[in-house]
Image 1 (cartoon, rainbow, N blue to C red):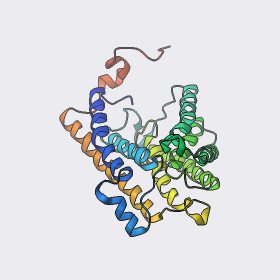
Image 2 (cartoon, one colour; image 1 turned 30 degrees about the horizontal axis):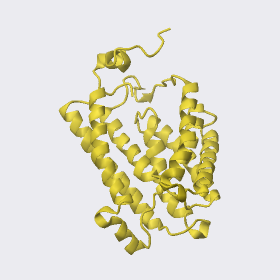
Image 3 (cartoon, rainbow, N blue to C red; image 1 turned 135 degrees about the vertical axis):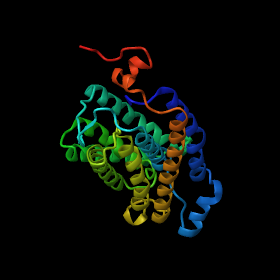
Image 4 (cartoon, rainbow, N blue to C red; image 1 turned 90 degrees about the vertical axis):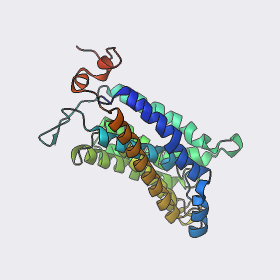
Length: 288
């Protein structure tokens, strides 16, 4: 955002959705290469990811981290090693975008069953409870910051995807609470301490909360904690870490290749003018 060239990003997207996502999706959801069978035989259960905490969200977040690291921070974002605050462009649109996603998420999670006969009310309840946990945790940990408040429910929803069909609702609430705190802490640390200029917090929200969701499924999906059982914590750990590894290798390979061949970043002048004017030839922000 604000510094990436348009055509290279389209090329990267095409490569990612053609090769990297299908590869890991095939391993997890289609049993390719015998990985799931090996986990089943070795640890008693395959890697479980009902609606994609890792397969969808963590993959996207860790791919984004590779892109952001190769792209570099926005000009002026850091001065003398210190963060320079950039005000959000629109808090109402931030809230609207968040809540459109929240409403749609119930369809996304519930219909991950893929058939009407397979729809489970437990998935809907657990999605709601994780959303509540993420909202409350982000409200408190984020000290009423609206940016954190409206991303908190998304953090909870990202984390609950993997185990939403297995967990007890109290386990889902706990998963969301941890995800909300994890997002606030990691977003703040990434921007301030690690100098990772991830504008929308894609890596903290999807990458780290998605990773937590895969692990949480192995914790709160256990029958001893009120879950449905049939999951292995070791399988969840290995499967989640495998998703991170595939995404990082794929992300650095795709974005690194494109940066070498074509470049990723706008010129200094284009970045100063903004992508709206320099690339798309349209003014999208009031100059008043």
